[in-house]
Length: 227
Image 1 (cartoon, helix red, strand yellow):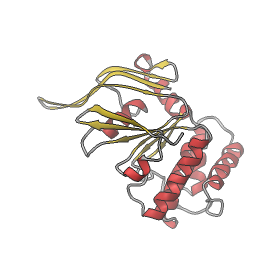
Image 2: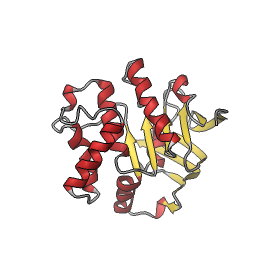
Image 3: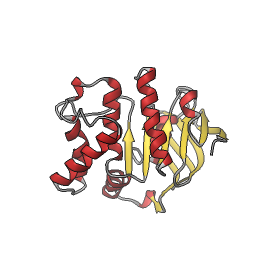
Image 4: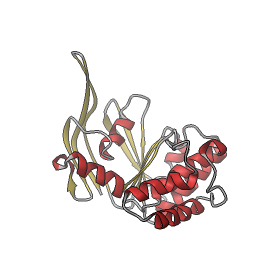
């Protein structure tokens, strides 16, 4: 589903070049749940942003679902992100003036769903994460855990090939974090490919494989034995 070869990302500030990713070879198979770990500054989020097409690498190759991404135009990348990927960020990234239902329906309408079909699918996705009773609430009327579940609904409503999550439990208490991870487990059990950056060992252990980054390279990969 994802393959990177010698993936590099450097950032330039004046004359100073900082190499954040230093040649990463990585493969994720269809249906795998992968946790990416590493201390702060190891390059975890930068790596996630490359493979999810939110940023462009400085060197190397990324092949996603059989597509060579460095040949893609910006428009093609955008369509790929919209149609094939789902994103969950640590700060929820919801639009504050829209209800839960509208937040989830919006990307579906951008994918050419009719309003009726977008709202129906959005309501189904929210019900799936236990928020069927919160459809018409604004984000400010929801707890952090509920807001994160809205953002998960938005990420999965269009049945993406790959779900990307960057520290999805970082701002949540234990109960809310567990609820989020239960949803990820259910999705994974149904075949969803998930790539998650986390610093929580207990949540990483729910994945099929833990990939550890240090100083811009993969230093270890642990396969979990629970499958």
